[in-house]
Length: 143
Image (tube, rainbow, N blue to C red; front, side, top):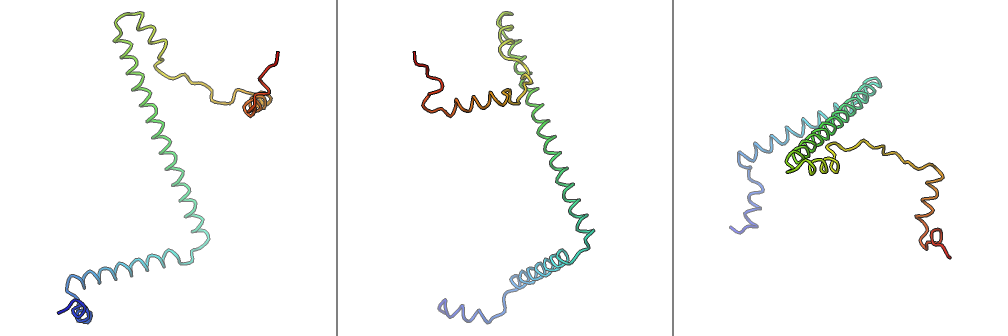
């Protein structure tokens, strides 16, 4: 039989057992999903909606706090490993003078520097004006 004739013939035949079982399972899944969606979308009291929103917000805050804590722990672990490596490098120096130099140049822990802006408002305006001066009129001096 030609493929076109066979497809027309098989269109009216009953599907095989495994295909009909798969179709039945799919229909069950779709019905269950529809039931769940109608249960979710049904009109809820205002208090329950507020309670769900509060719960979702609390879960979000907890997840954010856990992420911050993981980052903090990872940062501390990195700093401890770095300090240990630097201490090992210092200890492996052949002379005490080289060890002291390396210790002075490469600190074990980074210094806690203040990352705020150290310029006041007037100094900030002056720096911005100098940066925006493309022709160099503010800095070039004529003698």
